Length: 155
Picture (cartoon, rainbow, N blue to C red):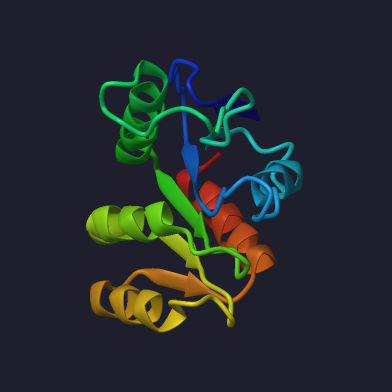
């Protein structure tokens, strides 16, 4: 397995999985680390937006090069991913994740995990239902679905 974290170059060979979802530092669990650990041993590339050197003082503006680099990396990585695994942590609001759900729900490559208790679960359920997007109840079910996709792709 290869893991590419933002903002490293997106040099992908074979199947790729983008880890979309709650990041809110200090609030969201580091679920990305759990996914990477549970998928260890598979011949895939994980695209992880959880940046090691993220600085919450960065101004969120197109004029800020670090912020712009992060957002552009995430959008490009999602556009090229074979699977977008999206997780909504119930302890977060996750506005960017909701935005990304809207952007990529029609892609046909999403697996969405929105557990009971997420503050906008009803909205997520409705959008996924309308566009036929696969939803699962737990992060472990999401892992199982990713593994099924890996096998489908022959990796």
